[in-house]
Image (cartoon, rainbow, N blue to C red; front, side, top):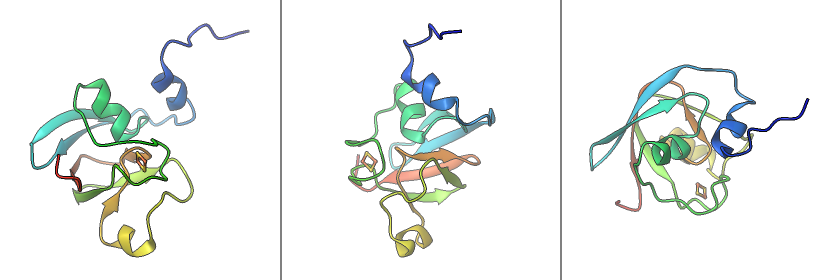
Length: 112
Ligand code: FES
């Protein structure tokens, strides 16, 4: 059977993750909130909800989206996002490849 659902890249990329939990994400300092399903990256979820975030590569390498996680937890879609162990320990995340593992609060480091 062939799939005819090619009009939504986010839905396609979500298929490999069967976690359908839905969380809420809050972006500081704007205090914007958006729905953050565990099956989407925070960046994808933000864009779907009309919240803009800094991004470029969207695959965890350029670090344009680097943010500080103030509350909550994330899971990564890729083995090694472009963060050092120290940065991870310090709570930095890459929203383009990080999926919410709980309600989250984070702050993009580019000040937007
Ligand atoms: S957009 Fe490049 S690392 Fe997130």
